[in-house]
Length: 65
Image 1 (tube, rainbow, N blue to C red):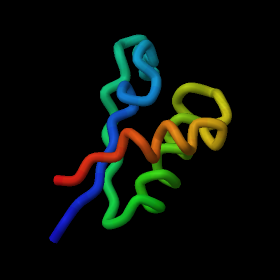
Image 2 (cartoon, rainbow, N blue to C red; image 1 turned 135 degrees about the vertical axis):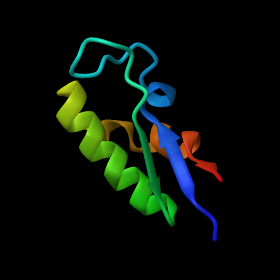
Image 3 (tube, one colour; image 1 turned 45 degrees about the vertical axis):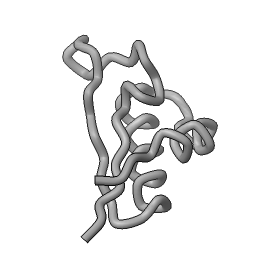
Image 4 (tube, helix red, strand yellow; image 1 turned 120 degrees about the horizontal axis):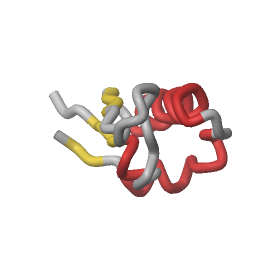
């Protein structure tokens, strides 16, 4: 089974997590739309910015494992 994933620091290179360290959060899903939704939620919560503004950046950064 194919898994799609993206790392937060692939979208926002200097993003920090809640502990003030470089955010290395990875979201996974079975399809691109699942990855995009999960990363938008993460960016919106963790980085306190509107993650939906980064939809195309997220889409271009998705990898397959």
